[in-house]
Length: 113
Length: 119
Image (cartoon, rainbow over all chains, first blue to last red; front, side):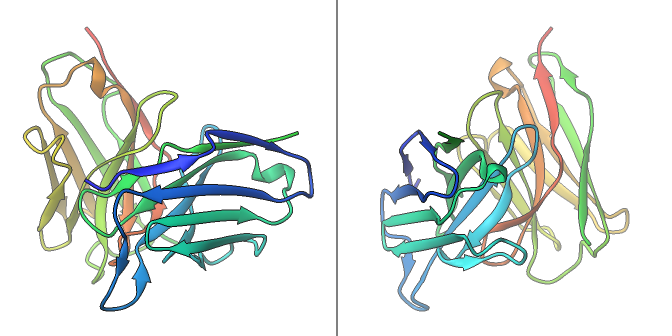
């Protein structure tokens, strides 16, 4: 199985400031034949199911604000919230879909400082 | 807009079988390229992928659960189902049904249903 490791476990950021979450896979999830990274990011608010934010490592899902961006390739990835808003308080998960079983990172809790 | 809704018992006795159904509305369960699956989340913990099924019946399961899990689909009724046998307290979790695109990202989720394995 591909192990996904997120850091930090939690972070507190002031409103309007940048928040960055890291995700590392135990092996490359870059598929050579199409040069795509098989990585998604999800946002989960309390009492709600996860919501897809980003797929292919950097493609925003329809309706997701452009303050959310994804970057990285191979084994190292980052989710950045450029200007944190109160509605962004949540737990964020990365997930690889390069190979079965699909696996998730342990989650990063984002709070307001 | 596609909607998913889980249903089933909220309490299952240890050693028994957990059975859940996911109803699909607002779209076709026969859509080419979509996978229908299940993810679970123990209280206060992270996400674990259970498995998925393609509309014509091919399945993929997490090896950690493979000996106990089965997923099936009934296209006419627009539902897919999860069976997990020989449950223990470790199977207590919120169970989500999901739809994934062919790429594997999970773009639709049900609201989730809490299943407690306890006598």
